[in-house]
Structure formats: C-alpha cells, structure tokens
Length: 111
Image (cartoon, rainbow, N blue to C red):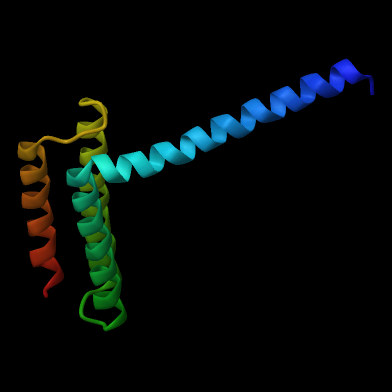
C-alpha cells in the first residue's frame, strides 16, 4: 500500500473512532440531563421485574403477564413519542400522565 492510502485510512479510522466516542458521551449526557425520562424508565423496568416475579410465583397467568408487558410497552412508547417532540425531554405534565398510566398497571400486578 502506498503512503497516501495509509494516511487516508488512518484518518478515516480516527473519524470513525471520534464519532463512536461522541455517541457514547451522548448516552451519558442523556442520563444526566433528563431525570424525568430516567425516572419513568426506571419505574417501567421495575414493573417489568415485578410482572416476571408474579408470573414465576404463579400469581398471574402467562396471558396476564403478556398483557401487562404490552401495557408497559405502550407506556414506554408514549414516553419516547413525547420526548421525540420536545428535544429529548418530557414535561412535568407528561411525566404525571405516564405515572398515572403506570399506576394502573401497578395495581394490576398486585403488590
């Protein structure tokens, strides 16, 4: 390989590495600067674990677990939709609405 091609490949590799590093820092920034989204998603994750535990203990059927997970997926989809229309943020009223919907699912889980 001639020297010009090697330099071009090294430059391209560096650009790819910088782009990847920028994406990683964006993830960290999201977590640090969007606490309402993080709170909603943590709660959805905990509820998914509760559903799994209830199913494993035989307190709910597979169909009930499937329905509860589907409701949680809908709430997560709404959270993503809301955030996509406000530069990655959700408003307090949107968070309150999502929490209200999560409360309904939580009552169905039974704890």
